Length: 277
Image (cartoon, rainbow, N blue to C red):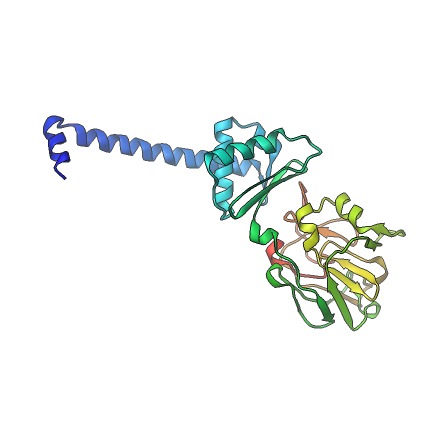
């Protein structure tokens, strides 16, 4: 406490100088924050970042954007060393690689030239499995819930469904015949072609009608049980984007999807609140 009076006695302008420097530092932080926000808006697509847009920024601004992005997602910002490793791995890894950088509580993935960050607890979540009586809701645990509602048009045909559906996850080897197709496809390849994020694929519930996969999460419907006018069942919906006939997709699930627009009546069969932007 005795230091400040001594300093003021020896250098009378010291207090004014310290206050001025502190003010300049606060202004610099405000400018830095505004710049980071503007840059983030220019490189973000939903909750993902465009790697190509990020790469066009100077290195210092790349670091600012990455920090602002993580804070916006409510995720902890890593150390300078880990942030440098994140930049390097995501920008320099070959296009056929799927780099991933972890630090406590966070995973950042690169997929199809976009960066995706999520909490490790969310990434490790698994769906609940079991029988789903038509007309009831099915709880998926932390990943949301399944619901069906009457609708007209595209959907699951009411008279094509058994009274009880089965909900489970992928075990490998599943095949699927999507709406609009005459041929069955390996589910693994179908998900790859649609750009479904690899770390989300095991979290997609498969809705089975007997031995057939009636729907793949809220991504697609089986063609045999597609709805007809006045005879369809559709899920409650919060947001969504249109895809091919009988299909839909979410930016949170797809890698690098652009130009997606909301639609009023998507052919979905479930509600996954945690996955929607």
